[in-house]
Length: 95
Length: 497
Image (tube, rainbow over all chains, first blue to last red):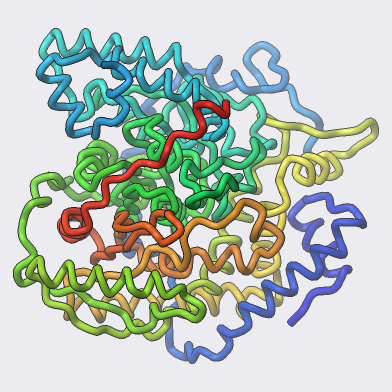
């Protein structure tokens, strides 16, 4: 499988990464190089093999649903570009 | 006297501080002075000299009051991927401009609890994605080692290149690193120091900027195996804030170092003889086998048949996880925001991420997005996850017959800056010996054992079974003793700064 410019543009939009025309040409080649290199995996027989998403095979732990910290409003918004009465002021990000 | 303090190991400094030969403040000041002279190495993104002196004085006060932690008064460098309370944390990315976390990572909090002093935040590949430190927004780190008779600048490796250089150049007694595909062990090998990736789950990931969450693991970078054991003891332990943290007691890693290797079975995997591996590395590996045999170990040939698939599996799994983890950086609530008049929020995201991420990070996020996208998920991501299981099963099988595995740490010594940055695939091959350990979650150490004919350090890697860092330390210590590698790079940088 290989990608063309239209596919890279679609992926870039999915990933919300602005790519200009000049970068696009190079990216198509780079991504195709990587994709053709990983194609060697097709040769491995994986019938009846369960996918492994983590080496951690335990069950996720439960914990009591209780407040363990809080009253950190100033710390939480310390990195906000703009803050108003303890709230973030952000550009409109919902329709 | 202060000039010599940077040459001590952590273990030596611990004893000398206890004997009151010098104070924590003097020890810290000696390192701060060395850092000041070493700007040519570009090992640090942020220096924290004032805070270091405050922490050192507090350590001296605790000692006077009889409170002595495992790392009391020891000055350390922290990879700039660990959140540090009130101190700029960048992940070497433009997109985290100005970000000062209001909290410490679990690892750094535990280090301060043990009495350690923070010298500063070290440079790295952007979001830990790279093997040469050249993807950093803050410019590459320079390896303190050079080839004999050459002034050419070499890579310290990556991604923990700033930490590796800081420790090798005697700017810090130890440093934290993180290892997703080899980012502790490869730079350790390139700079002639010890680097250990613990078992996945041994050290908390909480408060460490995430790259690939199923692979990321923090560990110590030091000049001796003993120092790594001391540091790992302070870094590890169960943390309820990390859902994959292992609820297991932390052994006394230092206690096993001097045990002999009688009856220890060491596996040597045939598949680690890769094409184009320099003869010097093959010879070094053979030498390592002889050393371990002489120390009483039994050597066994083993097979890890899926080794060659580890890198392509990694370059699907890691970018997939990265594309998901890095989706949080959109310029809304912190860090860089790039926007123009009339932009809607999608346009703002695209500008911010297009300009805030460097070329390698963009490449990996795009690959990750592609392999997770509808229609390609099964062919790439699911396939890779299945082969990951086979690779992991290979290790489980061989650990029924052997106690540890000996391999080279890297397929080459440090290479020149600029050599591979335009060829992602050749850069990825750096991690050929280290990536299988990450996919399987097992611990591994890189121990410096020799120099090439050209004068560059090389390491050997010892891999152990999950949650058996003790065997890794024991075998690593035996290698260190047998090799007697005890060299520092010549200081050319103090004049160059």
